[in-house]
Image 1 (cartoon, rainbow, N blue to C red):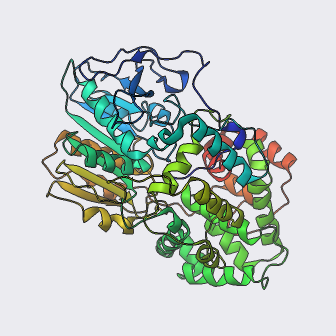
Image 2: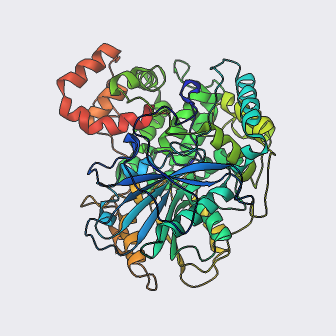
Image 3: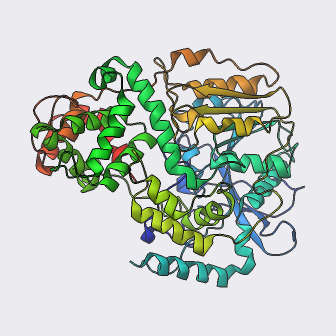
Length: 550
């Protein structure tokens, strides 16, 4: 799952909510009047049909509350018990991601909270059904020209108001809608943020230090001491952690003789220098992108066999690896999985560029340093993407600042921080930066071993459907003044270095991902395999989707 950084297909960067069916009712800007609730847009409709939505009017510029107004979507899923113990507000990541993700989790990962709590989702200004920022200009092959035209068009439309689509304004939106939600019935409120949502929640704590009864920060992006320029370096460090777990796993360790990291780093240097496996279809950028996707999505059961076969590189290994290349990079996987069409309002690449280039780079790396690092790195952005990031900086960067940017939170609200230790997007070794901002003993950190990004949603246990992250979060909000129950940490399912036989056949053309004869898998063979074993395909489709949905 993507919480921090996503790419955007230009044709999908649409502009506004006007003209869409089923538009929610509006609630005027007045903190003393309750929300007017109505039906939700289809993207925000919970499966049980019980949630309500409204478009809350807020000032574009909170320093000028009587001037131009915009709208932010608020969704409410009332407690099923009819006797709510409080409200939980969910803040999505990206930046630029839609909060509709959470609504789709109400009957699964978030189900434990639905009985006794009112669940609220605030759509970030600039995103989705909130006043949406998008490009009006048609797609173009010239990346710089396209985004410069987009910026110029938006600036002509909004003027300096364009820079009010920022984290501080979004934090003030949150403070306002939380207060407005309590006009008729005061309830304790808990704010949950994931990835960039933790950054948003930290900013909320700066503008409203007593604005909620607790904060839950899941997969944390620190306000200081971090930066998106460090993305590739973070992946390198987390690969060390992943290799450590490989060395502890019986199967993975047997393949790399307990020296996974040394073996793979040495291997890749030879591959990148054209000294090994010349018939491999993957080029350097593609291998690094494959590693990046695999680590982001926790598909280590495919990544480590690929490295193992690459190290040996016999004729079967070349066939197997080139099968994998065809599946991931030549469109065969997408055709087999049949990914649903992207919601055109599900992401704002404009908001992502504004916030990423003005608020999320306290620590900078120049292009030369990043390209040099990627010369022999295990995982990196492709070169063309790094070049695009530099273009983004020149167009969108250095546009605004305020007194809260690159400043640590300082508040006394009870806080739970949770993070996985194989999360390359918001790595656990940055947590001391957050802990340094703690101001009382009821601000706690819990680390989840062998867990990736978005702990509440990915920390599956050996038994049961509920995640350990959800259990720890529930324990915390049910009793804010006690140590949360973390006993489920001993029951985490953890990493999986063993691909199923069906996954191995579909991706590598061999029944064993690590070993054995491989047959060339043309698209026709893959379609036939899917049709012959539909149940196995259904079980494996999550793995396939994580490899090709990017």
